[in-house]
Length: 231
Ligand code: PGA
Image 1 (tube, rainbow, N blue to C red):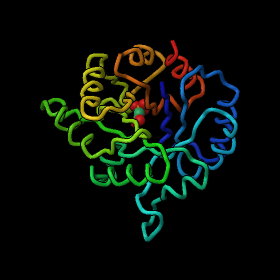
Image 2 (spheres, rainbow, N blue to C red):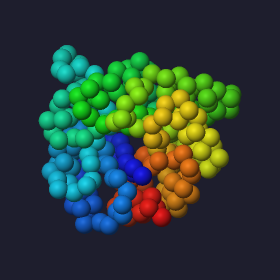
Image 3 (cartoon, rainbow, N blue to C red):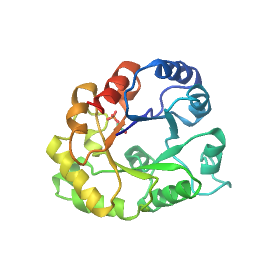
Image 4 (tube, rainbow, N blue to C red):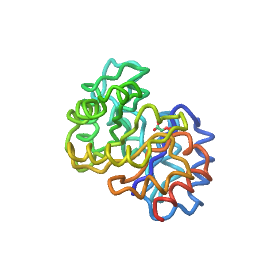
């Protein structure tokens, strides 16, 4: 079971150091735990979590090693800081920053080639689900992802992210089974995962962990979700 906390644009270096000190002390159970702070907080997270089993990943990564790409960060730079992996294709990147399937594929391939692990996000919008397009969308998004031992997929229905609307167990299980029929890799669930719904979602046969946004920002709720992974 992999539990990843996607901090989005929260926690600068000082707050990150404090949070990671708390994580060091916390009993998180046997789950594999990853935190994904903003770029400027990665180095301090790596330092504070050194010597623990908790890994640090970035929220995005560029496909070139270096170059004229204002605002981007390369896999080699992330490796230099001691980061273990990166999220690619989060729906906020796709929706707010025009990220295409092609760009997501390039980011994933370059990160894997550089030795990073990748969490690749896929998921349909509410409109796509209502129009019966969920499987088409998932097929399109998953088909460009490399089949690699260091890649995990995160199924995050866009309508469930930050909304408090979680996918029902049936919806999550169906989508996860469908994603696995396309690409045989572990699939995390994401979208309003909270301490009170985590155990039910994580118990589903094709759910291999969670990508947690809002509830990963507080130590108590993140710890409770990590512990739910082992129950
Ligand atoms: P949420 O975000 O848990 O706040 O819904 C999940 C995500 O965007 O990864």
